[in-house]
Length: 262
Ligand code: F6R
Image (cartoon, helix red, strand yellow):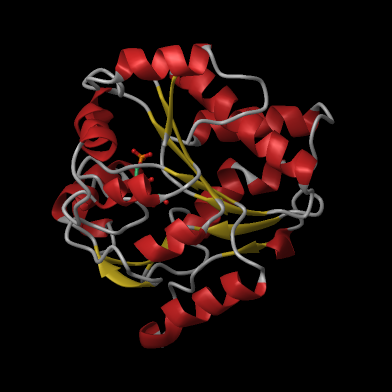
């Protein structure tokens, strides 16, 4: 696991954008996995700016959502498809047909997960998966106690997650869906490179547990310890509880150009 401690959320976003840019330079037809929520937004803004400046293009890229609420109408502004269209894909040159996500409005919830898995497989898998982390250590919506071997499926949201996400629903907890279809932990681990961004003091504890704690289903993000190419981009606040912070700073400062230190 490579841990990078940025000076601000904005710099964290810029470092994340560098990784996406490098991936697209290697392969413009890459499959990129997209997370919603607040954490990746500085990175998305940076990608939009770089695209507008002609520095990178998503014209050949395919994008796949990490998760989707169940039961929201397709055109609901807080569905994850609409969120990502609004915050990113409508502002870059990704063709609208190149964005896919789990089908949260289906009646066939039993097969929604396996159908999405099939789509990911047909795409050749995810090249670079962007992640955030929940206050309770979730990745995607794999809440604590999720199987570390899980694949895309229906999951019920934890109360803490629904409360955290109520801010996107005008603060009304009753409007926050109870269920999602989320990539499983094993699905996320299949991505060839995972890039997790966490900023703010509320993420200090889950980041400490993910980076320095034991591998446990109680902290689903700890499964990233198993990934051979995981990059964790933090700001000062989210890195504040890391006993190994000095090591990570030194490692990054000494990093040979073009190498990573997973
Ligand atoms: C979003 C997702 C979640 C969020 C996490 C952090 O698609 O799967 O795991 O990444 O809840 O959310 P923010 O970034 O809003 O703190």
